Length: 399
Image 1: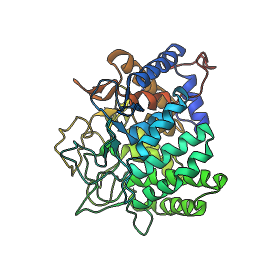
Image 2 (image 1 turned 180 degrees about the vertical axis):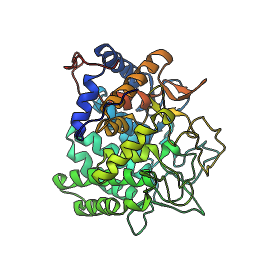
Image 3 (image 1 turned 90 degrees about the vertical axis):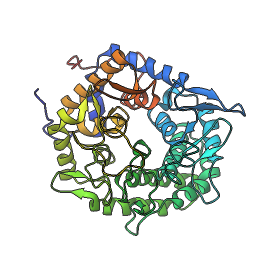
Image 4 (image 1 turned 120 degrees about the horizontal axis):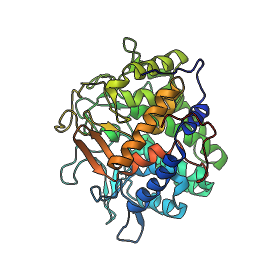
């Protein structure tokens, strides 16, 4: 399998253009239509009439989840009704706890739930990504709508939500090994402890977005947000594994190579060019083990998490299944130096969607939660904002 490497790194926009130009127009059209179907199919009314967006359209998850909704708005906001988005955000914000903790989700009855897991059997007290995802959600809505008044109104609550998240003196998110909280929600069954990679990157991104809006809105402390972000950038090396050329997910429990988080660090451009290239080299040389039908594991091939909150069978769900959720950042990151491989994976993912449905995650003889919206929107993100009838300009396509 030849892998054409770019002679010099592509910019993110060039990487996206390459991916778009190497996807069949028929597949792009199908993906857009399928994503619209997913976004319609996941809607249901709350008791007060607010339209909520469940993570899936199959009825498996029946609430408005903060992180899933954020990914919908960030990656496919051009397909969503802004009035519905605004109302759903207000519904979520109403679930903030007095101590500042943002909700993991809010049920149709308006009940806030702060931790992943069943309401009667939560995995922890809360999830560490609730605050960053809520801030990113509001910022994305305001960026798209230009509604600075909305940002001014809710900035104090968002700041309180970010202040609630435990940070070490070095700025990184810290999860106490003795009393762990759920980390990044797409690994919420995993008890990563110590300094955390993905949660810190989400916090970094949230702070930059808050800084970008606080200044024109004339509210909050713009410089404080930037300072927090820069502290994370400067100290992220604490999680770097020079032997593999990747980042660890955490530095206490689950001190293991993090595929999704390392790619996110590349996409957010918080790593040096040398480390960027080493991460892309790792993804390339290990592609046969970490990708299946275009979708990607959290961990290297054969690895399982060393500490979890509940038993998750190896090869399933968050412990070895393959997901499309990170494609919004992983494929553009990979395409910076390996555009042909990234395009091949993109086309394989869309083919699997068309043949087997859009699922939360997959493996051999295994698939979990059909009609999963984040899978659709995260792949659609590569084409978001393109006219519905657009056609790639390059006729050399992998699909």
